[in-house]
Length: 294
Image 1 (tube, one colour):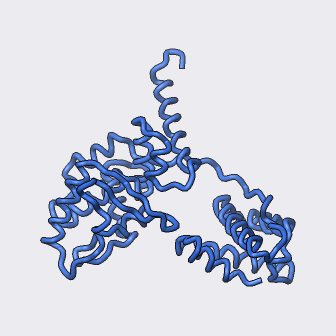
Image 2 (cartoon, rainbow, N blue to C red; image 1 turned 30 degrees about the vertical axis):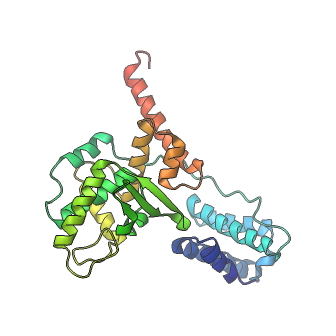
Image 3 (cartoon, one colour; image 1 turned 90 degrees about the vertical axis):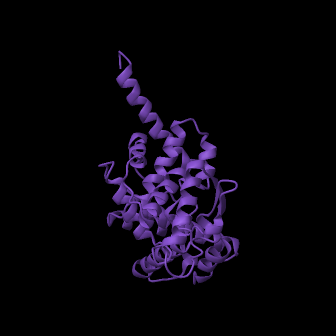
């Protein structure tokens, strides 16, 4: 059975990101190749749970990571749910398949004192790039938005009368993120500097190069890594680490977990609960340092 209709369904109806569609396409194509090699068929309708389990075993024998295997199983489950809904199969062969559990990894974040140090120094040059780069880091830390969300911010998405940013997140879900007066002041300063310093036609994008081109992800990644290197020696220094830092600091300062979930644009609370582990680890350390019998 051809799975092209499923890919069209998740792209145009479910509005999955281009990255997710491409990943699902690759995973399903790999499964079809396995069917052809091991069972001499490409018919997805004839698949049963035993075949799916045998594919899982082959992936594990190839030392494919648990995270990758989970994504591949998710792709198959999604496709077969679609086939079931369309009446192309009677039962979902992946419904009861359990992917291997991933080891729990706590999100890396930057300590508050180090973030304070970053923004209290003269690390940012007093020119267009320096003002823009500071705004990039401040937006990540003040809002917790994703890298893709930041580079796709338009000037019209900024409401300085209400101190809010409109963000288009995963699966094209729109959300509104509030921000404080400090970030509002930085945005105003940046917009003024952009008018004076940026050459070329005026861009619809909020954050641009000196030639008015939309920022690209690799450049933003390099900017973040460069400035975080000045205040921390930890291994990971990325926009996603700043997203984790935002969430962890919010939780440590008493923010409601559901509120953090909405600000981050998570689909469910389980994705947000990982940040509670960091808070528990912090409490453990405080306990060990402070309690006489710890």
